[in-house]
Length: 241
Image (tube, rainbow, N blue to C red; front, side):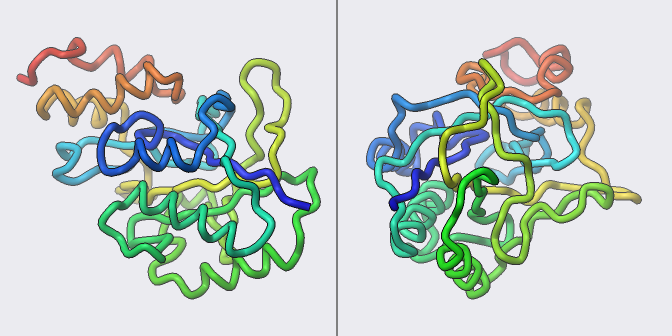
C-alpha cells in the first residue's frame, strides 16, 4: 500500500520567495492540506552572512512545544526511490547549491519521522537507514546533555509525533520528512542562546533580517520564546541602531 508522506516545516521553507523554494513548494507539496501542529522548536542556530548573523529555528527535544506546519506531499511513497526522491528534493530546497543526490551537510540533514500508530514496512526503514549511513556528515545535529540524541543512527527524528493544534488529534499521515539544523550551543554545560542574545542579534543587524522572525509569526510558526523576543525587538521595519 502506498504511504502518505508529508513535510514538517519549522521556518523559512514555508515562506522564503528565493532559492527555488517556491518551485519546490508548488511541485512537491499540497499546500491546501497545510496544518498547524505541535513541535518542540526554538530559535537556536546562529546563521552566517546570508541571514545577517542572526538566529534561525532548531528542534530541541526538551523545550516547550511550539507551532509548526505540516504539508502533505503530492506524491505517495511506495518505494525507497519515492522516499529518497522526496528527501533529495527537500534538501535541494534547503541547500540549493548542494549536489542533487545529497540529503545532509555538516550543519544539518533530512530526517524521517514515523507515525507510531502506523505499520511502516521494515524494508523501507532498513533502506532509509542504509541510505543515511552513506551520507557524509549525516546526523551532525547536537542537543544539550540532558536532551540526548535528536537523530538516531537510522536517520529517525526522535521527537513526539505531531498533533493538530486545533483539536489535539494526531497528524493523519504515515511519514514526515524534516530538515533539522545543528544549534549553536555554548558554555559548560552546553546551552542554547538566551532570548536577549537572540533579540540583540536582530537589533544589531539590518532590519531586513528580523523579517525571519516576523514572517514566521505571520505564517503561524511559533515558539515558546516569541513573546519574550518580541518585547526586546525593535519595531518591525525600523532600521537597526
